[in-house]
Image (cartoon, rainbow, N blue to C red):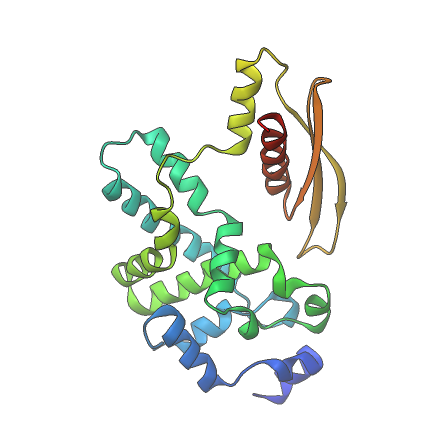
Length: 239
């Protein structure tokens, strides 16, 4: 670990594990030993460090993940329509899902964060962890190719696709359908609060259906907060 990096990250840099430990973790978590370790190191590096960051790899990994999941769903559900496949796809590739998988494989101890970002909670931010998971997929793709990256996605996402017995309904669509079926006004969403640092924002959204009901919920993005609010509203209406 060089002196320049230690100075850039402050005392938190000492919490990072050694290169050998990183190599062992990559091998265990992703299933193959890295031959391009610098790519994985970059995939774990947040912009707060003032070093090369995960952003380009995240761009690539997002596309690799999307193609892998699309191919998988196309093969797995040969009788389903484009609309049904899209609903399954959208439920599987969200930032929150990517963040959950990042936590499950043990990404957090290997994140390279500046001290302020770590103190602000970036190490448990869905936005950061979701981006890092996609960046790791991008690094894995560059290291081992499309077939291996697709197999990795199927392994890491396997339990989630197995849990999709039925085509998932997005909560906002389901709430819209409930309102129409019950002759109510369409749901309306409004941001009532936004807080937190830029890398870990927190949105609070209120959803209303006329004067019938109003529910608030929070998330790390406007879309996530709206989805949470719609889900909570549905639970209240269908209770």
